[in-house]
Image 1: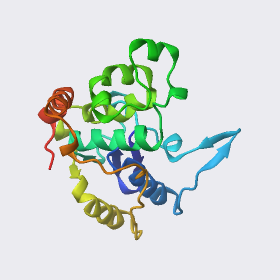
Image 2: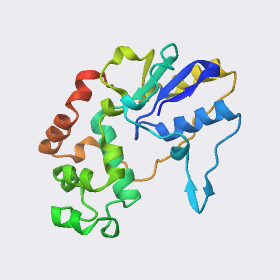
Image 3: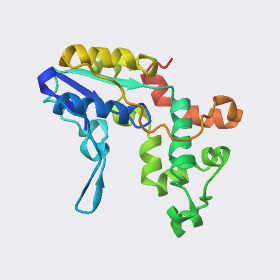
Image 4: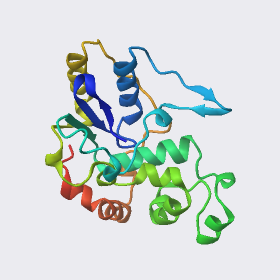
Length: 213
């Protein structure tokens, strides 16, 4: 859900692969005045995303935060998509053979797909991998489609400004940690024209709802 911090009257709406892991760490510091450290609870690893999950826009407590300074960060959908592929597929190997069910394989999912195959079979991978689905769901899934809902919308290039704004509001000298950066750097030039067109079509509602730099 949105991270709601009443003491500074701010609510932040996270979007996976839009620096949200790093920003969640910043908000944990604001709320607890110490850094977050992963731990084990009942034999299970407890990550920052267990503490602050990213949820569909409609599942947020909108009545409670209607007077909050509501903020979000957006990222060019193609660059976000490439980051998702790099981190979740190349680095974390979430589409390795051991993670694909027989049903997924039967549906046409290829283990460890290259980029073009990943784009071509995106719907199959999204259907059979919860993590891939979460990391490729459109911005509007997490932010809604009304940009005017937000008090301020930051671009990825504005992250330093976001941290400065939060530091001023909280009275804490905050720093943005660099989290979930594993994986190769992949440029848009790596995509074929057909792949670019498919990605743009998939994120059409994002492009209609938000501006991206």
